[in-house]
Image 1 (spheres, rainbow, N blue to C red):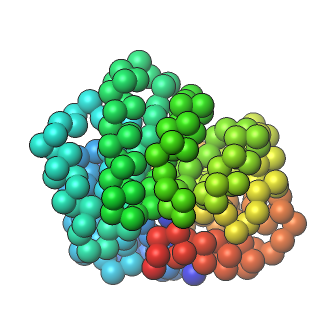
Image 2 (image 1 turned 45 degrees about the horizontal axis):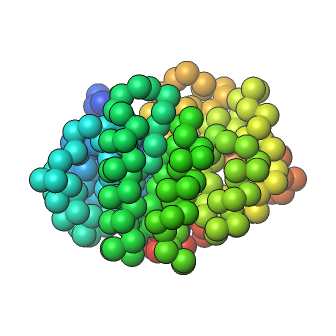
Length: 254
């Protein structure tokens, strides 16, 4: 069974048919899903999903673009929810310099606080990094403790940067972008990296693979990602599924 390590099924894009989509996942060989928080509001909706569906686990964290909403009071709430049953990681957290807001200093402050929380609770973390390669790496390197684990979600940087994270023992999250014709850099990373450090993810409802690029994504489309990974690494589809599912269970300690 396939393990989708990064989804957003609480997103409004699923409001009209969420139950139907989730009930249908078993027909697409999807065995386990992790729903990833990205805001204070999504922490609650993620928790609701973990309580309703036995195959859904969750994470607690605030995306860099949403860090402007954090205060000491709301961070205390985040800390408490991270201890809930079926919460398996801190994320998604990180830095996003693509947009001017929130200010970089605000992003860095709350990124550091959430990294520290992951260390304090001995939990893996999920990193969002966009146009912020150097700062992201330096902050992680300065804060993480040896043996702690992380995944660089929707990895989009070069093979050289991938090597730094892989050497630290981290995982790279690979999804629909690897099927895009113009994703030469990511295809090179997938060819280069060991399969033992690759996690399958959709980031649904975003980043649907070819031939559904631009449409709403869901876990069932991971079959196209798996096919491309198998092609790039010249291995069987079965090997990709078996290995990445094992990787995900190891990463999330399930």
